Amino acid sequence: MKRLAALSLANRSMLRNPLRTVFMMLGVTVGIAALIAMSTVGESTRQETMRQFKNMVGTYDVINIEPGASATRGMPSLTTVPPTLKFADSKALTEQVDGIVAVAEVQNAFDLDAKYRDKSTAVALYGISANWLEMHSYFIDFGSVLTDEDVATVARVAVIGPDVRDALFPGEDPLGKQIRIGNVPFQVKGVLVTRGAGPGGSSLDSIVFIPVSTASKRLFNRDYLTTITVQLADPLNPEPVADAITAVLRERHGIVPPGEDDFSLGSPLAAAEQVADVDSTLTRVLTGVSIIATVIGGTVIMSLMLIAVSERRREIGVRRAVGATRNDIMLQFLVEAAAVAFLGGLVGVLLGLGGGVLATVQQNMPPALHWSSIVWAVALSVGVGLLFGLQPAWKAANTDPIEALRG
Amino acid sequence: MIEISQLKKTYFRGDGTPVPALIDVSFDIADGEFVTIRGKSGSGKSSLMNILGCLDTPTSGRYLLAGEDVSGYNDRQRSLLRSRRIGFVFQSFNLLPRTTALENVEVPALYGEHELDRSKALALLQRVGLGERAEHFVSELSGGEQQRVAIARALMNDPPLLLADEPTGNLDSAAGESVMALLKELHRDGRTIVVVTHDEATAAHADRELLIQDGVIASDIVRAVSSGTGKS
Ligand SMILES: Nc1ncnc2c1ncn2[C@@H]1O[C@H](COP(=O)(O)OP(=O)(O)O)[C@@H](O)[C@H]1O
Ligand SMILES: [Mg+2]
Image 1 (cartoon, rainbow over the protein chains, first blue to last red):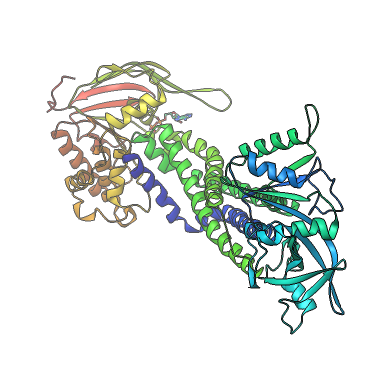
Image 2: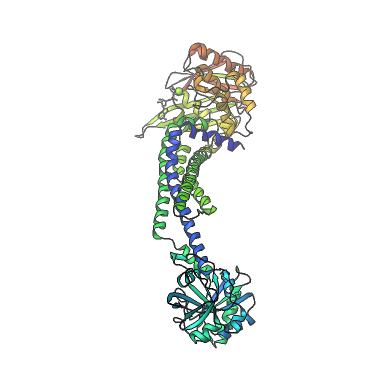
């Protein structure tokens, strides 16, 4: 308590010379403001990227199994994957792996033409099992979804994205109409709710879904899959399920050590994080610059405090004469330096938050910031204050009281 | 209270030439004595006071404070002694600027063994006749008043020994007289008081007067029977 009182008395010196205090704070304020503004923009961008990514993949609580030793860049497609993943593999996973809520099969290809009468549009075609749409948060705007029965009966039905409807059925009800893909006719039974843009701004609505059985037997005449999607009971603990999947598939594919997997497992969450967390060089440079600015702020604190120590020699002498130890004096000046830097940091945090919010709102992103960034920024300020207060405090502590009190 | 023997203090100039400030000084001061040390400027009074006040250490010789040999004490130990046993009054008051009288009196308590006690600081200001001016900034006080604040500050940690180095040096004679009168009152309360002065009239207030010349004690005059408990 008493030490606190000693320090509060000490810190009134900040008020006695407000201009100097402001200058001492300034460097730290500027550095920390830049740091916080950048963290706000960075975190907003990250969250926005994550959101767009989720918008694209529809879900994070899944493991995607793709054929081939390493995951294909971008989306897998029938034309780019090896024919190693079979319908029977999917069935085996459903039966043999614990911790799975659902297993969905996909056979897809890009850039196919969907036609209606004289109109034509390029679409991404997805042959899917009936549970895929719900699993990936696709919703029907009107009409109906694909059903297990559609898959079982190899029905020639399709659910189309809103872009396809707009391209093929302007001002016309698409339900019940026949579109043709690769000369196979499909009856439109539903239209999807729009999903807007994915990362990079490309539309996710130029898409057609048909039963995976129909895709395999009537359209592509291929018996392998491009993706098996496994929905996890416990998305936060995917490792055991991934291990079990690997074991089952290796056995089914007759792979023994040291043979490598002929399939690969991927998690959209991990992928999204990887995409979102790639710091731009610019961010890194700016972070460096802000930290340097903060450190320069520290040197300003140091030089102004050295002046203050010279000016306050008599005060130091008095305190020493009435019983203050060197440590007491040292502590007093360290606390003063830390307090000034703390205040500077605090003002910097507020300014940085203001700037960051402005910048993100201007880019139509919801502002976001981790609490930890603020804690780190404040800790950095206090640390800088303590570090650069060290020399002035040492000088103060070693002031000769006799010299200081003379005259 | 104070026993010093063969005390020497030699300063060294930048070029290494020695400046002897105290040459073989020995004397005792009993508990409850009121002593003045008189001497011309440069005779070594402040050098002696700094050692007595544990601000400085002697080059050689022995210093017993209340029976405790403090000659070899380190900085930390001497800080503790200054905090607990010694009250200091300076010629130039040495109050903290832009601070109230009360806050100045409280400063020693920040480094003492007891919790900060505002009412005690206030009582001390009343004791020196400045109860009304407690919340005044020191710049609003006259020289005599400032020196009284300094005396109240010196008393804050209840030191048995009060040292004053030319306490009237910056005051006019009336203010100087009243400061000496106050010190005499404090002496009557049982404190041991040592006052340094170059002024004969001021020195005459004390029961006993040590005369210092060129770093040696030239005379030791006992003027009155001490009201203290010890013998000289
Ligand atoms: N730090 C010092 N360095 C060198 N010489 C000093 C120092 N302090 C005092 N002296 C010298 O020691 C002598 C005694 O000084 P001081 O004790 O201050 O005398 P007084 O207080 O009686 O005027 C003087 O000659 C002074 O110049
Ligand atoms: Mg002197």
